[in-house]
Amino acid sequence: MDTRLLIILGLVVIAAVIAAFLIIRKRNSDRLRSRFGPEYKVAVEEAGGHRKAEALLHDREKRVKGFHVTPLRTEDRDRYIVAWRRTQAEFVDDPKAAVAHADALLGEVMSARGYPVTDFEQRSADLSVDHPVVVQNYRAAHDVAVRHERGEAGTEDLRQAMIHYRALFEDLVEVDEPPSLKAAS
Image 1 (tube, rainbow, N blue to C red):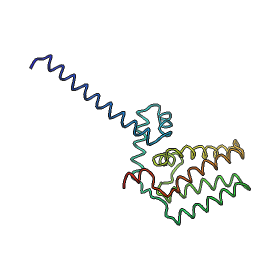
Image 2: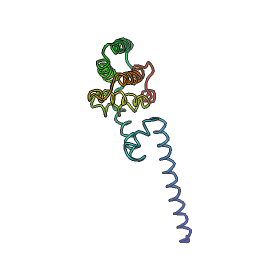
Image 3: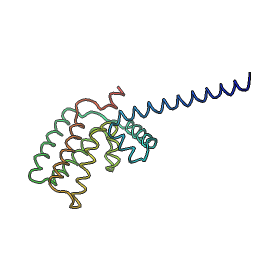
Image 4: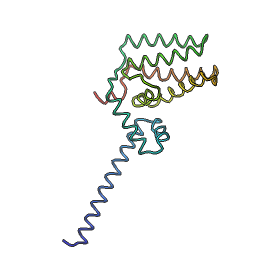
C-alpha cells in the first residue's frame, strides 16, 4: 500500500475516533444538564468548569445510587405532613423555632427516605441527584437560618426560609418515586 494512502487512512480513523468521543461527551453533558437542571449550572460555577462539574455530578450519581432511597410509607408520610402543619402554625408565635423545627423535620424525612444525614453540604449534594430543582430551596433556607443565628436575618427572611423548606418538604413526601428509583425499576 502507498504511504500517502496509509497516512490518509490513519487520519480518517483518528478523525472518526475524535468525532465519536466528542459526540459521546456532548450526549453525556446534555444528559447531565437535563437531569440536574439548575443544579448543573451551580455545579459548573462551583467547580470552575464543565469537565470538573460533570465529574462531580457523576460522583454524586454513583454515591446516591448506593443508597437505599425509598418512598415514604403512607403512615410515615401522613405523620410527617401533620408535623409539617404544626411547624408552619408555630411560625406565627415563634418564627425562629419554626425554622429550626422545619430543618430538623426535613432531616428526619431525608433519613426516613434513605438519605444519609451528614453535614449540610453533603446532604444537599446527595439531594440534588433526585431533587435537583428544589435543592436550591434547601440551600436558600439553610442560608437564612445561618444568617439568622448571626443576627443578620429578620422575620421576613425566616418566612422565605419556611417557603423554601416547604418546597423541599413537599418534594420529599411525594407519593411517586424519585427519578433514580423509576430508572432502577
